[in-house]
Length: 102
Image (tube, rainbow, N blue to C red):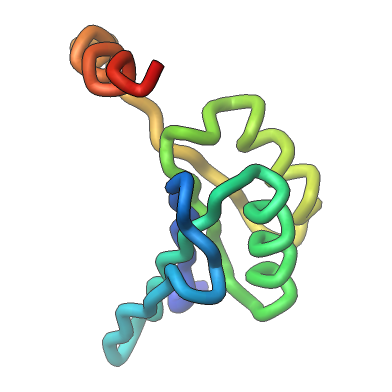
């Protein structure tokens, strides 16, 4: 089976799935990019995507292992779910980037 429909869910404090989403389409692949402002909204979106036939859901690094586990639980075994991680050489830079939000 070829991958033809893929979704990437990203977090942003003011993102709402109704207004912060887009699709990239080619002859062979549809990629959906959906913004959410909470884990709860991500669960709803992931369930909708799974019901709509999306074959793969990826999550931005904000979700981390615990957030990804909640999304995996929400969609069950209908769709594989992955999430972005950062390697050890990026940890200090990531900390500096997000430390200013405190």
